[in-house]
Image 1 (cartoon, rainbow, N blue to C red):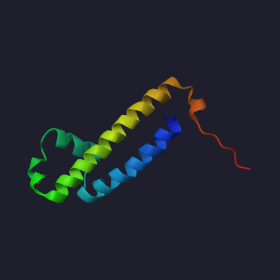
Image 2: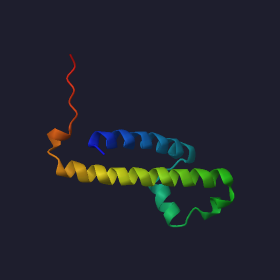
Image 3: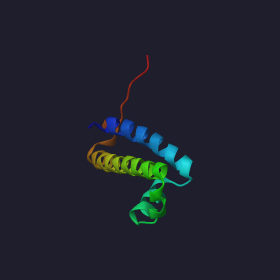
Image 4: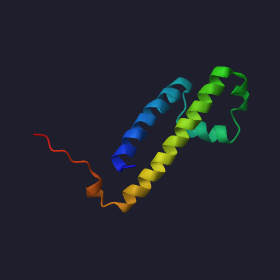
Length: 89
């Protein structure tokens, strides 16, 4: 996947993460840390929350993978070659 494609996909994922962050009032990184530490088990009994948390987790993990790939690619590139320069006429 091209670097610019990763950026576009990460921004789309971030928009989806923002919806959960606004709904639950915490940042995705903090949610994920608490979830992985087992600190949110009491919410398992609620269908909506359980479904939201499952989706939120999946979106965040996908974002993390894309971010890792992006970081690896950007380190290998000459930064000026990574820019998508499109002159306006």
